[in-house]
Length: 341
View 1: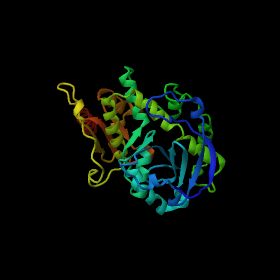
View 2: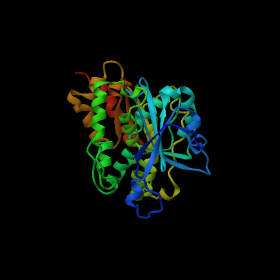
View 3: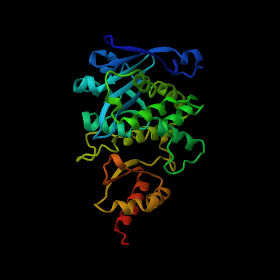
View 4: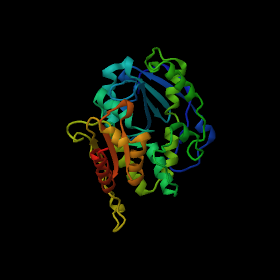
C-alpha cells in the first residue's frame, strides 16, 4: 500500500454499498484521513497500477493558478471511499505527475469530476496527460433534468456549490468555498503556497469528498440512453480545449452507441466536437453586442457552444452536440463572420 504521508482528519460522504441499500447517516460522516502526496510511493498501488481486475471509481479535481494550458496546476485531489489524497504537483513535480498518468488515462478508473474542461486542458498541455473515462457531474445533472422534463436555459450550468446544495444529491452548504474565492481574489497565487495551510487542505478535500456519493445518487437516476450521452459528452469535454494539429487522433475513441439503444426511428445521433477558427477581427461579429449574436445561435441550435474567453484560446469556438446540430451552428457562425456592417 502507500508509504506513510502527512494526514489530516476530514469527513467524507459516500455510499459503502453501490447495490442500492440505504446509506447510513453515520456512515456518510465516517472519519477518513487526508494524505498529502509528494512521492509516487505514497499513492495507493491500485491507483498507480490500473487493472481490469481492480476497477475503481474515484472523485477527482484539480486546483491551480489560472488553471488552463498556460496556468499552473498545483494540486490534484483524489477521493477514495476510505481516504483522500492531495497530490502536490509543485513539491512532487514531473516525476509524481508521470506516476499519475496511467491512472488518469485508464479506462479501468472512472474519474468523477465537476466540469472537466479546464482541468483536462491543464493536464494535457502541462504534463501530456489525456484525461479519460470521466463522469462529469455537471453533464450528468443536465441529463437528469432533461430526463425529468425540466428544460435548461441557455448557458445555465449547475455550479458545484449548487449541486452540493441540491437535496437530491447531497444537501450540504459549502460556505467555506466563498472564503477560498475571497482569498484567491486577494492572492491569485494562493494554491502555490507551501507548506499547505489547514484552510488549503480542507478546501481541496472538500472539493472531492462528496463526489462519490453524488455519483451514486446520479447513477440511480440516469437511463441507459443518458449514460451513453454522459460517456460521450464527458470524452468530448475532456478534449474540448486540448486542440492540437492531429485532430485528436491520439485520444481514445469515443464510446460507440450500445446495441440496446439502436432502435429504428429512435437511435441516438452521433455526437461530435467541432473547433471553428475565427479570423482576426471577426470574434466581435460572432459574439455581437452584449453577447446577443452568440446567444441567438445557442438558442437556435441544440448544441453546446463554448469560447475560450479570458483563458483562451481566443480565436476558437468549440461546438459539441449531435452532428446535424453542430453543422447547423457552424453554418450560422460562418455566415456571421461574412456579414458586412
